[in-house]
Image 1 (tube, rainbow, N blue to C red):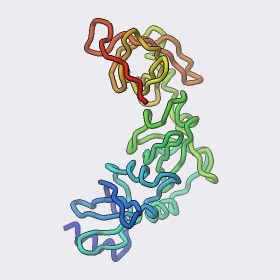
Image 2 (image 1 turned 180 degrees about the vertical axis):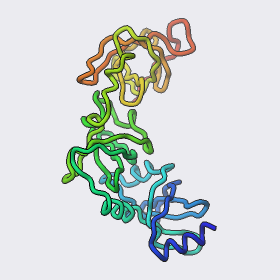
Image 3 (image 1 turned 60 degrees about the vertical axis):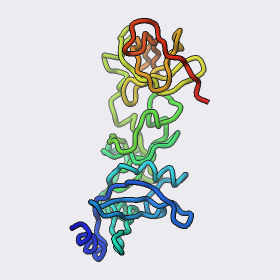
Image 4 (image 1 turned 180 degrees about the horizontal axis):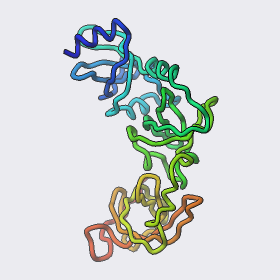
Length: 254
């Protein structure tokens, strides 16, 4: 049974794979709720290996993700775990060198920074190193839990680049002027919208006669592509499932 295993793990302070399932507050301090099998546990925010900033938001990013944590206690059917200690142990036995490309897991996504866990480190990647074309927020491009390659630009201070580690998606043959493709509306702007064709590939499209709303799927034609700068423009032809001009009403996000 899992609780027997946890007692042994806690006594030996060994590492186990846990899954985050929620966040609550204890004494005004946010705590991450995790499970090991069917047994509930907690990780205090201070030991969750979070980046600086809004700890509750960063904890929320971890919900649904599985990761290593050291089991440090078990009492009355609930265990206590330490994610920061688990990362320290992994980092101690796993060298990391500048100039190398490593595979990691997106753990946290902010407006201008995405944090990728790789080899026991939480590597920050700034917006200009995360995407080739500026977007309103990196949350329209990255999702916590997905795997990405990252180039280690520097070890001290720790910095990474996703753009330098992955092939330029804008150079794909499908992204040529005149290509007609399906895309999703991920942001609403004054005078236009941002379309996403795949993770990391976006385009600006002016408002059609009857524009789409946030989250709609559309058919668009590529107008211009600057692969080097990661810029692309498109025109919306129609909303998927329609033949005539778009009937969806446009509602600006306030």
